[in-house]
Image 1 (cartoon, one colour):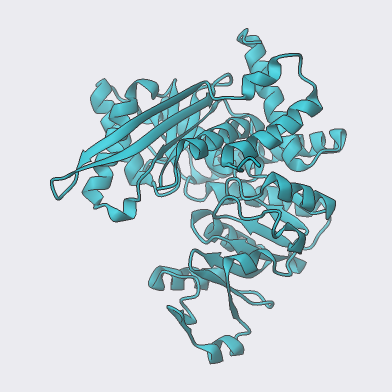
Image 2: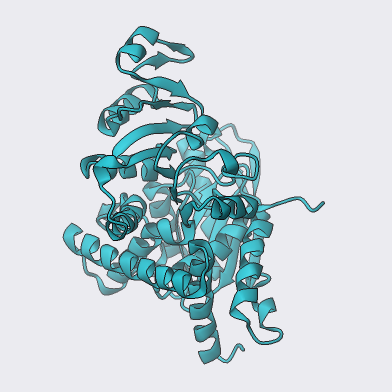
Length: 428
């Protein structure tokens, strides 16, 4: 039996949709592999004087609709297969929200937590040095991803400008505001998903105050989403981070949870110190400590995986009680789980639509960098809402017309838009 990998999981959905939209003979192979797969080693001299070497990748999947676009992650598991899958998903994603980008992704197999700040900066700058000829505002525009942040983007932009002797604020996005960043970028992923969830709830004539929400992951996307939903009257019953989570059927205050997480490093910090918890206070507040696996199977209306990939699988999909899943994480649901959720009438708003707010505001930042403008927060928010709702309506229409799941419909919309651009370019 062939081992499932991030890229084979992408291909499983891709091939299913390609079969449904009936391309001409030979056209299916256009999507089998990325256009370019750049590989190199990042070699730095550590603070201890010793050389450190890390494999690095820049996978460029498709640029028919515009420059390649996609984040760079620093993580031990960021191997070629994972980065390739993320690049492919990014190509679909940018097409779904109809912004003029293709799809790419970068990765360095490194644990930045084991490096000093100086060493992390050197990894960032060396990444630009080894891939410089493949990057640029009109070629490939990176962004932050797992374990990378605005400071790292600033170092990368600075290194690129030194190498090219140019002024290039649009060569990378997710930068600090003081160095060409955009207002609204920090909340964009959650904000985009929130707009889509609100639209779905409105269309189904549901009452937010009756909707119980569980959120796996309390990083940037999960924490902001929890706050948006809480402020709108949804009942956030559970949140978690890498150390576990807390659950209360009466609802929890994510603003308070965020304060304790900042202070203690964990969402359970109000009640627990390490593995020792104040059970008396937890009982009084009707709060339970739960694992990440338990959170997925809670009795709730909306489940939001906002952390890791491959968490909803054939092993647990049957036990998921939520009727709606909004994927803020990349690739949280396997194809086998998708089939089970479909059978159980669970509506999944897929990652290539739900978490596209981040790349959309990256596009806004790229546009501002090219024009020299600085948009207000209100302009960013208004334009993000319009882009996300237009994308949701296109996917919803395709799903209803073709009797597809929302994931299949999103892939269908994205592939067709990519095919249209490829036809114009004479690639078909």
